[in-house]
Length: 277
Image 1: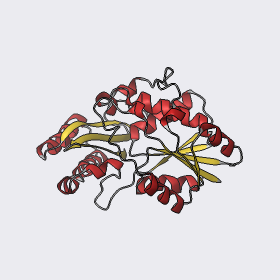
Image 2: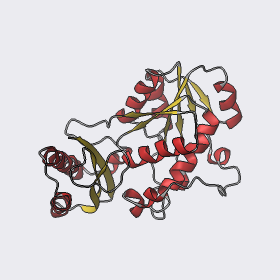
Image 3: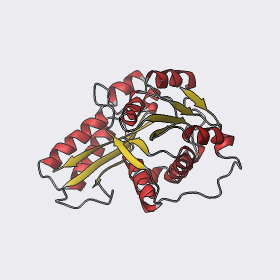
Image 4: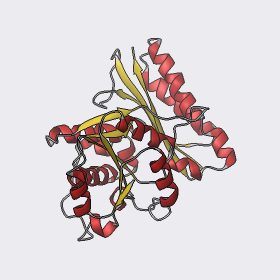
């Protein structure tokens, strides 16, 4: 696996790469990331992964400084997974003027769901992903469904900007008890880890109720919020949305997604589950 640290070197490597799949990450890799790599390998001649902890998508008081940097362990996992190249730029390389004057501004969906609790987050995501796409120039890029709102923003951005990149969604990786795999799961204490699957349990309960024909979305959402709060969680949201647009869902719609974000101790967990009926 070649480790590439500059924009110029990345562009030079790309010229001989053939059909290229890309997996952007912030490192601290786990099995969910490796599932993205596996999907990428199935779609292209070569795979490049990036590791870059993007300051722009962290809000005030969030964990940018504390976000785990595990470069050596990440490299071992990527080599074992058959990755061809790792793009690992320093912050100065990606943001040479420090401040990013021109940003990619998503539509109003950036201020809903997670965006309501993390102002500017999706602007930061859209901006850095656009920069990475411009540098790596992949034919396709793989994103996990766990970050469902992020996936929606990236897909819409690629469509609106006429980017010649196929976005490949990959199902959420889960632990044996249903907990969605996330780098932030490492922040959980042993007691919190035992409690954490409650989030997914509530989503599957709502999924079943919706598939059974229940259209009282507000009552379903409130029931899940109450269950989490009574167990000591701080709930940001539990919402039923239209799966393709993330618009507020209306009774009787066939393609839905239930999205949730809540804090367990100091750890913010997100998850979602699609509902087709």
